[in-house]
Length: 529
Ligand code: GDP
Image (cartoon, rainbow, N blue to C red):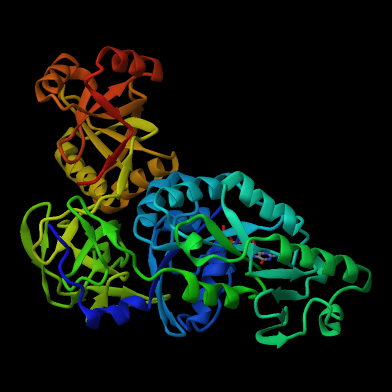
């Protein structure tokens, strides 16, 4: 089927949208940068500074006490703010790798990312992993090298590391004027201008790298060397190429200090100027363009307990095309049923408000009582399903048991709800034995137990399962699949969608079975359908 004709009236608000996430290794400064970005957008009046997180004053992404206790970001949320002509939707991602699934799902809903690098540390493990996820989706990346106010590594070395370890071309847009204690600001190659550390809102035009006003900012013994290096950086780097950036092959690089609120302005201006407006999204049947007239969207996150007074669940939906209007009817493609979007919500730094309308690129929260699941597609009637909200085979499997057998049914219901939210994966063994939960990181075990106890009044225990890993199984030949399932009964379970998984005690035994059953596909990733 061909895409319907784009609707010109929609194009403008959509062109203003920038939907992005920040990727970084913990402690590189993501939270600090987020707060500073929100300040620019006027979304929060006071920079609560990063300390808010540690002081347990509730910051935006601090809904769960477990997260406050540990000082980490567990949940994913969205923050919308306006700056200049643009509407920014910043999707927050959990910092801890035990919640990486959440992060991967969130990255399926953005059009660009900011990569924050600690100038003293360079590319760290998690930056690299998240970058790889972005690369799979060709997400353009703007790089912010942070903490220039501290002693850090040589800027050339950092650029070189990005190029080599990530195979990503770099173009420094700004260049740091000294660093550490003597960090004085940045020089912008294209505009020949200087921003001073203590006056980030002023762009001081200079005649070039030789300008005495620039030299005056440097410690005298550094000036010559700095000039030489800056010249080398300017002449030696690839010119900024918008197409290469948009395709994910080149990253513009900015230097700054989130803590000192320096360099953030250039970064946000770059996001406005270079980052793409909402991109077309691939669905099973066709590519859906953002400026098509009809609304489509997919759910990438479910959040419970955002408001302790209301036991509602909020489904976060990325709008892929068209315009969402409050009260409109939408089809939930998984069930074929129609639902009214009566109270879509926008999220700002400290509060949320009802959205009367929202456009492609926006993320709205849809309150619901269990109707919507991760991976669901909503449309104005068309049967299509967006791809790319993946589920990964868990790395931890545990049998979950409850002392009071009378509560087994309640436990099953609670686990189903939590699995729909993406908190755990739930596997129901074919042999009738107790439910097995799967997760990527050990912290999720704590979150699950805490939520079962506090929200459902269920005190549970984990028992190690004899299985340590599982794979989704499928086959082009349905009879082959059926016979495999029948002959491996006790190692087969159904996931929450009723899709079969094969569980194995070790990688060795998994390989053993895989080698003997070549018509069965054993997959460690499942796309939600
Ligand atoms: P996250 O884990 O990536 O969210 O990192 P945070 O934003 O929580 O920052 C980690 C630590 O680095 C905190 O102590 C921050 O105050 C500090 N930090 C963040 N940005 C800067 C910066 O630009 N300069 C300095 N000196 N410290 C920073």
